[in-house]
Length: 83
Length: 245
Image (cartoon, rainbow over all chains, first blue to last red; front, side, top):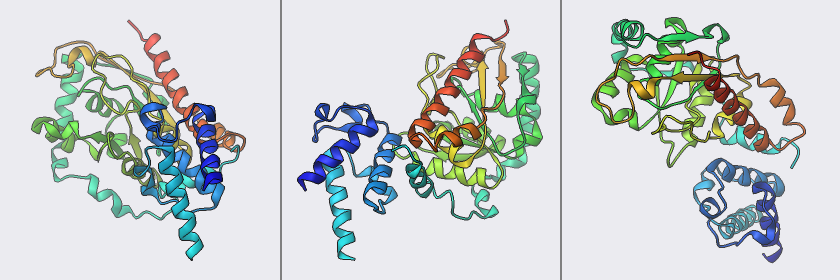
């Protein structure tokens, strides 16, 4: 989970073009980092690719923070493991 | 992230590769369309004699499908552009219109009778709007999108939303930048009646999308969508700056 958190933080930083140490995992990425909704989808697109997941299209409504993205990815990985 | 894997996600997200039936378009048509010839007869008179409208570059519009992307600062903008492109192109043009157009009964009547309207919510859920635009383009029709996402209150251009770039690149359709001049003075937001202020509509040459599709092979898809959107913004600013006095 710790590694996943680090990886997701790095992925988000790369997509939104910020340094990882600038990012607070609990901050609202839309309000605090100026991420627009389409960039939110782009973050999910990169998670979809990196982990080979099938990230549902409704997921962008579930995420506000990096912690939310970590939880979402973790859940999707766990769901995949059960299959 | 220099390949176009995220592009594949966008295609999945927007259901671009799913089949679309012609019947999909039916929902955007209204029985009020029967009034369309009368409406445009009146708009024609108003445009020519009341607003002394001038139209430039309409020959730049290619064969459909394409995206018409004008600035937006007045309720007059869509009817004016629809008038400027002529009846043949108007028939196959689908306009993405926000909730605002449906708040006022008169505007609602004008819009539903005068245009094929795709009702969208640009505040909370933009994805259905993008999905609709993709399906319409896939069926060979054209789409009218306000890249600002909403109406400018002061007449100055608002920042553009990247969605227009996503839709254009993923469907491989050109965008026609359009600058509408004078409508903000003729009918600013909140004004009950239009003033006889001169209006002009400028159609630029289409932004060709093929080169951006190529760029997706070496750049992150989102950056390419952003580049297209930035180019559209630059082109509309250029039209604004070179407008004829």
